[in-house]
Length: 323
Image (tube, rainbow, N blue to C red):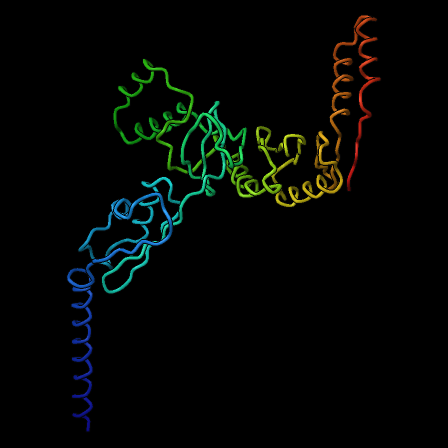
């Protein structure tokens, strides 16, 4: 009986060893001989051809399906083909790869130094143009880094690696570097010169694209603690900070459409109390006259009479507080 148990134990060890060897052989064959890529199926829409997408992925016929890194292939496609937002790759055993493409949509035109970065919905820089693209939301005041800032970062990295930077520095001194972003940034994610501005920018981009049912002409984050917007070419909306921005847009939209006339011009300001204050164009002009009189208190009697006359003939200002 004891001898029989010993034999059964030996068989178990033997079978385990055989199974292990078979498994190792199968793994080796799977990553060398089996599962060769023969077909690539592409779905979704794109301005690029099938051959261009496959070439960008780095995948070739005969590559091993298991050893092919799908994540890296996806990154290559998105980086090399500017107007592709995402590329999702999936193994289709035994010999296929499926690629689903999501195209970029021109969503925003971010101003910098008199030009505009055309951005996708995720903030990918698609192009650099002299004018905003129609049907995109224009954003001012994002302040991306200039070429000189990028160059300084590169030379610091080069110096740290021990490489010579003399020729690069000399060339930069001889040739005046442009202040605008270089074409090399196309395809990269948009970034501001300061990290906190970048955070504000992306929160703004996420919400502003569909704000006010498309009636927002542009947003301005020059003062990132008081973001403003021009609505329908007639009302300036001052939101304050980016916090609860989606709620502020909906609140402002409701006030404009239900409380303010369809042709009224003026400024709508969000209050820290949670309400809003509106002053129309006549009130703004009257405030400007008062301000100018305070700045320049000494005026002639003739100028004073002209000012009084203009005030008398102007519309009555409206200041409306909505809580």
